[in-house]
Image 1 (cartoon, each protein chain N blue to C red):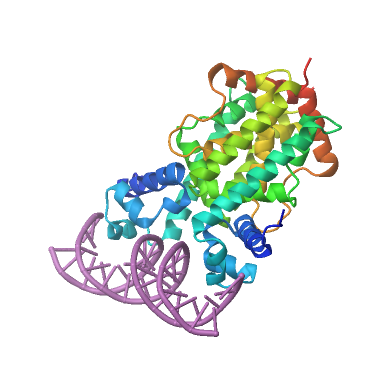
Image 2: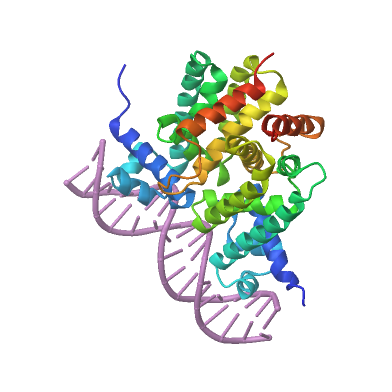
Length: 182
Length: 182
DNA sequence: GTCTATATACAGATAGAC
DNA sequence: GTCTATCTGTATATAGAC
């Protein structure tokens, strides 16, 4: 079992980073190649087209998300709390992949939209047994969506208005209280 | 007091529609001109650059949002309920303008991001007196953000997974209950 | 496996006729 | 006020050397 080629991962990291900080329009093959430290030709050896790059990014997001769902289901403070809490972990690989994929989806990439909807359905299945009813489930999912959306709106590395630390703890507690299964 | 030129509004409507249904990448001057029923030269008579078009769209969104906030503050079932409920009115001019502006923001347009953040601050000021504390305020805002984000993810005219009718009523009620001022 | 050079297409914007 | 024709920059992708 061999590790994936390092250069491929470096390119994907660069692509992701540009999408997150500068948006879809800035993520050109030139810019990606520059940031990844390769030439455009080198990039196109690893990914034969822009679409191949998009597909790889979406695949990375899906893999990370599915692995994360297994972890959430076993979280010590409960899946709901863990799910909301981790929706705001901006620096982590999964959250970077989701934010980058969201930018693609907003730019009109339907494969990205479909993948995000698919992951959202898996989240729903994971949370459903732990909340009161479908309305409570919607609340949990929408708070998570809201956190991701605000993450994605923050261009560059500005801190943004998202709750952190004690504020985040309070929000998680409120969501858990409001949706807890009787 | 004269009405704004009809052609200008038609162009802005076409721009908005393409952003919503096909994403930022598809919103080229050619496509906008075609859908608005004018030539590219005609379009550029009304808006001298792509940036002028973006600025006009962001301005329309801001105007509609500020007017809407005044209405929400006077809503019969309370500002919180009205705010959450109207976050999912996908066909209305304000919501179309917000969704289109979100697409711009995701594509890297910082003016769009700044405008959306500004409106979000106004919403927060409007809702704050009617909820228990800052945590409850965050919950209300994040549910609204989540509804908008899901709207924006739905490309084309697919119905999407958003709550409607009785489901939306139940969600509104849950949010009001969970955040109501003591 | 990575590079330079180039082909092709399309974006935004200009010029000037009508 | 709206059009056609055209210019310029830049994006993706190809060809082929090293």
